[in-house]
Amino acid sequence: MSPLQPLNKSARLAILCYVGISAIVFLLMMIVGLVMRASQAQLIGVPPQFFYQLMTAHGGSMIVTSGLAASAVLWYFLRRYTNLYTPILWINLGLFLTGVVLILGSIFIGGFAGAWTFLFPLPSHGLGIWSTGAATAFIVGLLLIGVGFLIFYLEVARAILKEYGSIPKALGWPQLFKNSSDTMPPATIVAGTMVFIVNILGILAGAVVLVLILINLYVPRFEVDPLLTKNLTYFFGHVFINATIYQAVIAVYELLPQYTGRTWKVNKVFLAAWTASSLMVMAVYPHHLMMDFAMPSWMAISAQIFSYANGIPLIIVTAWGALTIVHRSGIKWDAASLLLMIAIFGWSAGVIPAIIDATVAVNKVMHNTLWVPGHFHFYLLTGLVAMLLGFMIYMINGDDQSAPINPNKPIDVKPMTAADTSAIWVYTLGSIGFSMMFLISGTASVPRRWAEHFPEWIVYSQVATVFGSFIVLAMLILVIKIVIRLPKARTL
Image (tube, rainbow, N blue to C red; front, side, top):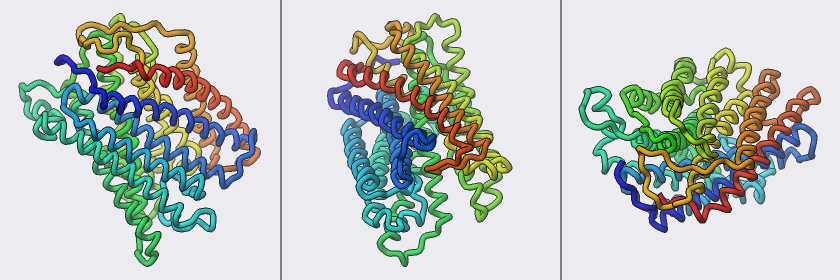
């Protein structure tokens, strides 16, 4: 690893804005999630119309904010290997904030409650609850956020290709397929290349469907195929959230070596895993559409096969790599490294109920139940968010903020405080329990996206509310620490 240059003031401030905004929004949206579960548990009263507004804000905000936080991870580590153009960080952030204002206005002023999926023709059928203007604000807000991310990933692509010359070289194909003696590309480059490929395609698909819906809002005679729009929507959504995880895992590849004084070895198995997932992550999305019987049978069958196969390569190389790099390393655990290891568990375990749901025979029974939010809450709360929190706490936990990084010597770490330890384990327990109550509810055929539950279902929501309270309490402690210490965050 070559000597690192500190972040310039503009890039550092932008990264800190990404981190601070993401941490605060995560906390706020977790509170919203807790309110929804408490309402379903009949512990508080939330009118159904407002419930669906909260559901729309919660889903959309968590997805795009996870993307923002993961972008900070990608940029922070990618700059160690490439030259990135700092103004892109600010352009992305500006478009993000503008889009968020429009979306929140459409929901809480305009009453839009069509969920983050905005499935056609729902935006134009508000039934008096929301207007065309509210739907327009929501769609335009998403478009602006998408444009910001598209510009961001185009810059990532430019920087990587300038340094490595081509996509095959950045993915390590000469070493994988031709036994080239050239040095293996770093894990961050391989992951970053996969991310920009799939996310550029995914965002473009999302932009197409948003523009189609926007035109239809004002020109109803402009016919839009509902099945086409649903395919484009779920291609975008599935690719974007998975690419978000693939960006966040870069923190594992970069930080565990710093804690252990060992290098993360990139070998042929690692390269093959990332290449395979680059293809499969784009082919797996039809498992969201198995209930759409107009879909070709071959797509449902292939989606089931790819759902089984997609998560396995990356999880195996990442989980195995994390365990081997930590084993007998003498690592001194702190809040950041502990969260990263918990995240590996959450990502690995959370994919199991997802694979179960992607089985056609199971999907017919389970897909419209709370099993689905159960599986994605599991690997997002215990996996993705834990990774992002680990990165954030690493950022704020250094004493010598500009000391050079020596990859052959473990970094000095601060012992965890009682508050750190308690918050992390309470968060982990709460996340697992909260997600498991979704899954258990799903096995009892409790439907998803219902504001009110029958008496027989209320106990599930009540238990989930208790676990959700644990998450919010722990997150409050962690976010306060992150925000307070942001001004002293690392410069390298």
